[in-house]
Length: 251
Image 1 (cartoon, helix red, strand yellow):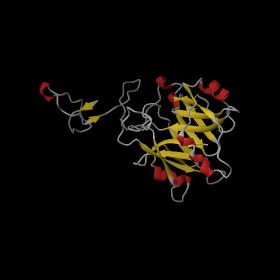
Image 2 (cartoon, rainbow, N blue to C red):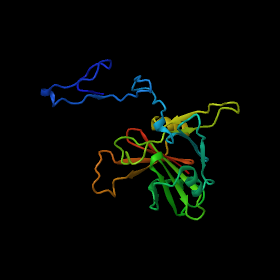
Image 3 (tube, rainbow, N blue to C red):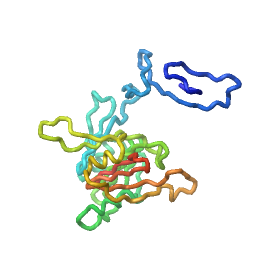
Image 4 (cartoon, rainbow, N blue to C red):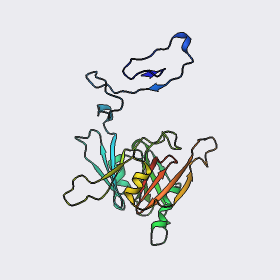
């Protein structure tokens, strides 16, 4: 539904007359229609439908552990647990299918974690399994072929990697308050950086590292191409100047 003027949400589709071709689009409203033909509010959650079968519903991540993936249809699909240091490249291929790309180039996001290790920096080489359709990357050891790092992408409009990955609806799960707590606290992909940072560490945010993803792209010009990497114990947040979290890296 396209609106060409500041009309109310309850009004129907506004069709411009022949002499109004220069009008600006003021609002685009996308609504979902169910099998019975009923239209749902555009701000509601998307209802599950047959076309979503096999898509990633959400990814619940735990620091120093890994990610649990939930797929559509939610009621019948079995969650998949990908554990850092345990899941192999063969496991990924069997459970997720072959990656859309295998990438051997180093990634600057992976270097920041060395500052948080007591031992010498991890210099082992590896390769990426890129699952663009799930919004995820996996860095795999070149010697053991075990998952070393997991990257989850938020696919924020205007960011350097926008539309390269499908959005991964990630949630960072914290520690439950007690053994009987069945609903541990979580922070979601839509939360601001300050909120997630305080969730990970109540102290001041750690120093950041600047990354320009367009530095090697001659024909890519973005108004805000620079992002910031904030490293915590076991997790890295890539953020924008407007406090949006573009990706989460677990190591």
